[in-house]
Image 1 (cartoon, one colour):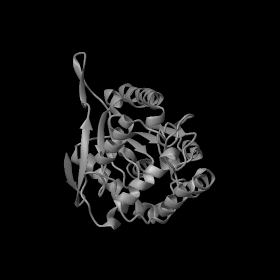
Image 2: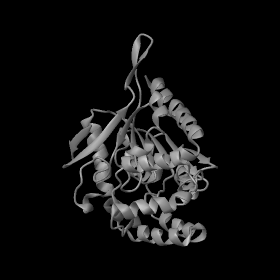
Image 3: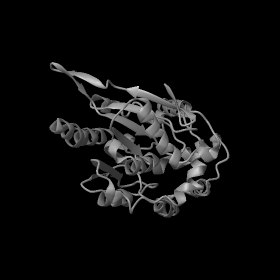
Length: 301
């Protein structure tokens, strides 16, 4: 589905009913916007991993402008500012009240920024392997220097400079960096596993220009640390012990700044928690949403 908003065309897809039978009434489930990473990723990598969450929330998958199936535009329009305002415009377009934001990686940076700008519209934050400031970049550089192969270090330098020149080069980046992204990465996949990976790459439509805009520009000054104590929405912060790109200490820092937030560290995961520890991740999110979002709303009724 598409929404013409903010001078662009944003793709979104909905999973799960919004209203479900509950005895003699229809009960409204929370609506959760799923915000992908990158910048320049898309929503496809979260399907079907997030599907179990549709049992307790209605999921709205979104592709940022220029990414996935959303409309392209001038590279300078692929900004954090526009990503935040597109979320607000889509919320209004769909006629929604408060929303839950599930932000992974860069999506978590967008979610934090949105929560600070539109606190009255946020029912909850689910922040997965993300960061509160630009300092994650220097930390990630050190990790690559320590753990990376020469090929990893070379392609990571392209990321730090925001200098990707094609989708093919971006695909090469993710292929080379895969062992750092996931603790369950298999360096010798079977033919079936190789086919599944190829299909996943074909389904996605990453935008290297958006990634360049972020790492070559606005992410170098991104910093919400002084503002995060103002966040009042129920917040679950999820870090990963072996994360290379948004190191675990960044999740600890976010949780320490947002009042009454909850923190969990997935000890066997890297950045790709949904892949590395899918069962524990789903159970953790469901428990938090039930306790801190659904039951809180019911108590107010």
